Image 1 (cartoon, rainbow, N blue to C red):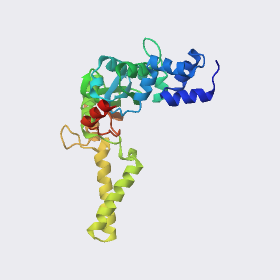
Image 2: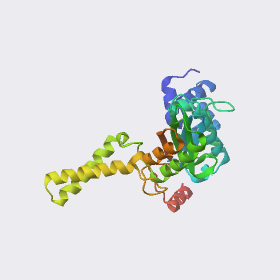
Image 3: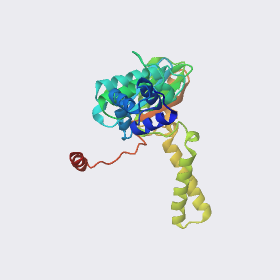
Image 4: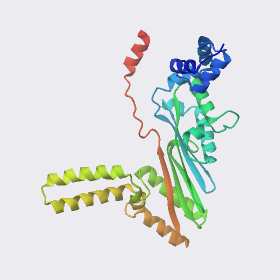
Length: 307
């Protein structure tokens, strides 16, 4: 029995499964729509797609380093229970290792990459959704590297080695030895986890954030009733302080509460007799930016019982 593109579209809308999965289901069922629907249900693909509409803001951040390259990956789940699941942890760990060998930070490309043991990362993720029973999402990837030197990983609130709630990578470019760079990178990584910088330097801060801060500062200055030229200086000062407080290199180092991070790096280089450059960093905090739905658990249970 033949089928059309409209059949694929209808099956996808009915089950929520992926287009290629719907096409395969129709192939396997000879174009029979209901049989294809049953095929997807049997494979757990329809259930997996249905779960994909649920908010996934828990999960794990994984970090991995090889030589002068490091990568951080965030994989989300619906609940913290899944983050403790060995199957989920193994997936995040192996996917992070796969990402380490990737050419770019493209999530869709990573989903299509070969997964250890067979299939693709995306296939394995879909299977995990079906077998574990919760929506899971491969959310983001970020790679850093240096020409020479070291990339230092750090995980805060670790659930397992290199897996946790906050993953940090620090890229230090230098000819200094690992005995110098590793402890320095670890301290800077701990600072990054605590201080939450928004960019490496003030020049890298998002223009929209700066514009928003300038607007807020202008409103505050206007309320002061001071002359326009004084207000302008107040605004410039407020924006400069915002940039200083949110750019990593100008932040005050949390370890001593007085020295800017840039100066800490410079001093370490002088002590080692080799210039050290803090080239880049990554800070992934689990679920940041995801709007979590507030759930009335009692109402949810009642609704389930009445359904």
